[in-house]
Amino acid sequence: MDSSQTQALVDEAAGLVASCGDANALANAKARFLGRDGLLTQRMKSLGKLSGAERAAAGRELNAAKQRIEALLAEREAAIEAALLDARLSAEAIDVTLPGRSAGHGGLHPLTLTIARVEEIFRSIGFDVADGPEIEEDFFNFTALNTPADHPARSMHDTFYVDPVAGAQPGLLLRTHTSPMQIRYARAHQPPIRVIAPGKAYRVDSDATHSPMFHQVEGLWVDDDISLADLKNVYADFLAQFFERDDIDLRFRPSYFPFTEPSAEIDMRFADGPLAGRWLEVSGAGQVHPDVVRNIGLDPERYIGFAFGSGIERLTMLRYGVGDLRVFYENDLRFLQQFSR
Ligand code: DAH
Image (cartoon, rainbow, N blue to C red; front, top):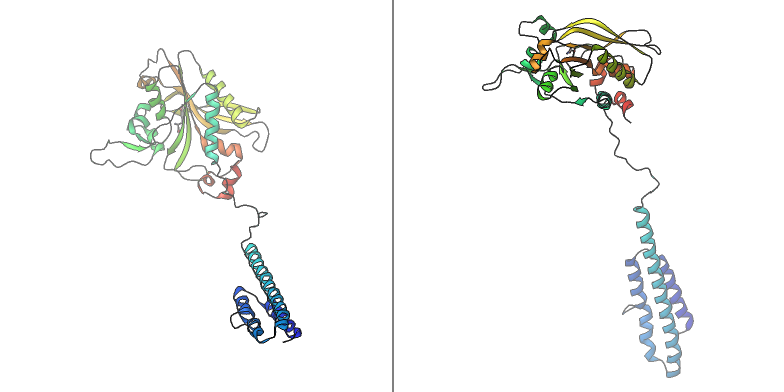
C-alpha cells in the first residue's frame, strides 16, 4: 500500500464531506471511511500483513489520515450546525423597527364634553351637581311643576309612558325635561339652594334640531334675598366661560312656563364670528312660581327662587358650529373623532 493511495482516500473523503448538507449525510460519509467496514478501516486491518518496519510507517500514515478525516467531519458538522442556527434566527427574526400596534384612543362624546364643562363652570361658582331618574313620576314631571293633568302645556311635552304593570306605581313616564329635579333636590335640601342637574330628557320630537332623546341642564337657585339680576349675572358669566368669549350679549324674552312667573327665554348673540348679530335661544328661565315654592315645602313669602333649563345639544352646536343635531347620535367616527383629545 503506498502513500499516494492513502492521500487519494483522504482527498475523496474531503470531497464527500464537503458535499454533505446535513447530519445524516455526514454520518454516512463517516461510515464510508471510518466505519467497521470503512475504506480506511479496511486498510488498517490489512496492516498485519506487512513486515515490522513497513507496518510502523504505514500505521503512522493511516493514523494521520484517520485524524485528518475526523477533523474534516468535525469541521463540517460545526458548519452545518451554524448554518441551521442562522436559518432559524432569520426565520424567527423580529423587526424591532416596525411601528407597534397601539390599542387606539377612545374619546369623549361632544355632549359628554359639554356636560363636563357645564358642571365644572357651575361648581366653580358654588353650585352643586345633582343626578335624577329618567323614568320619572308624573307628579314630579308635571303636577308639582304646576302642570296638572288637564293643563294644555302637557301637549307640548308628549312623551313615552311606562305601561302600568300589576303592582307597579302608576303614572311613570320618561321625563320630558330636567325640571322635576328642581322638586326632588329642593325637597331634600335646605336653602340657600344652588344646584344644576344635567341629564337626558325625552319627547315625541324629531327633526334637524330635535331628537326624541336629548339633554338638558336644569339650574335652581333658592335664597331669601336674590333677584332676576343675580340669575342674569350668573348666566352671563356661565356663557362667557362656556364659549370662552367676551363678545356675548344676553336678552330675556318674555315667555310662558307653568312653573315660573315671570317666565323668559334667554337669547344670546355673538358680536363676532359667523353667527354674529343673530339672536339664538339657549334656555328657558324664570322666577319659580309661588305654588312650586310651596310644593318644594318652602314659604313663598320668605323664599324666592330662580330657575333655568338649557339645551345641552344647543350649547354644543353653538360651541362647535354643528348645524344638525342628528350627527350627535349617528355614531359616525369621522365626526366624533374630531372631539377626542
Ligand atoms: N323645562 C323647560 C322645558 O323643557 C325649560 C325651563 C324653562 C326650565 C324655565 C326652567 C325654567 O327651569 O325656569 O321646556
